Image (cartoon, rainbow, N blue to C red):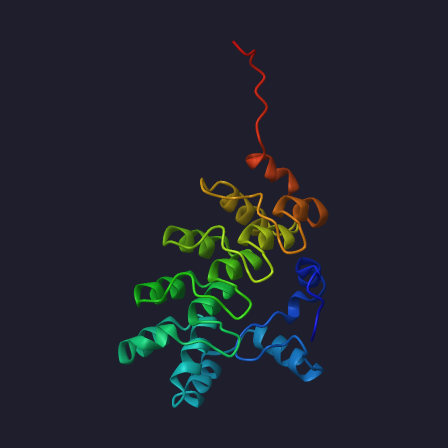
Length: 231
């Protein structure tokens, strides 16, 4: 899929967010079969199903650790890293590492295990996404907090200039409390640069006012007016 250089990435996220590359196969040009497969993956599965999947990937350790990180298979992640610590740095064709996978799926324990196992905290996908971008896009506030405490780049920008704050602001709802909590977490960070603009010229505050119910939270980072008389 090709886009002009000045296209608005956030508008595309809102309209086609379900097609963001997640995992071993990019779904930007997804077919109906791929969409159905993605829906099936979101369903709850039995332990037997997970064990069968792991067995099928036994001879493909890179694919297995990526899958295990995404599916919260902590014991499998530990086992794989014990056998081959270098697996923590592998990635899929879109540049997503095990840490990205765990971050966008909201698995704090797996995120912790991967970082303890030597994972870089700020690896980049081919589109410039860090794990913090992924956690904030899907409102996983606990993961975002953990990553920030371990050196995640708060103001990192994607190839399109999007910061974690842009992504948190673009994916909010009044019924999903974690979306507000994710914004509060980012806005409370001392070194936040809330005025950074995307390639389309928008700040995260602009995005929040346009697309979300929590734009009032950005008052936390607005310049204060000094009401005291000048002496």
